Image (tube, rainbow, N blue to C red; front, top):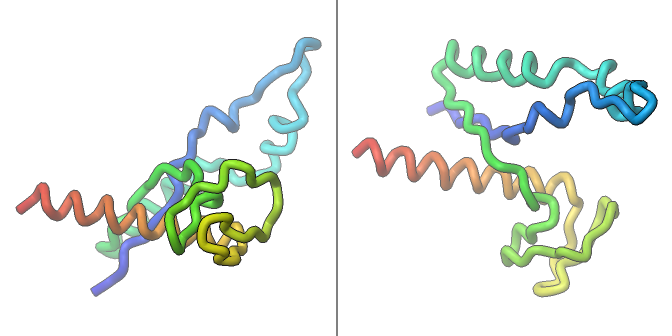
Length: 119
């Protein structure tokens, strides 16, 4: 059985060309011009999944890097650090790996709910 693909549900409005008070593109909008259009990338992933019969599940990424994948506590004090220790259970995390684990779990939960609703 092929495994589902879990991806962040990206708010594409954050990639809009935001202009500042002088009607100039903001630095963020300027740098976003050099990225692959997020909607095209998401579309390509979904199309490939559909073609291959692999479910693609979008999940809300809110707090996935700040939520301990061991105990579920949310570290609201976390700044921009890439590595952190959970204040509740002392588990050590790489922020990106931790977020990936939490995104995968959210996708599993969403898939289970979908399966339960189709029975």
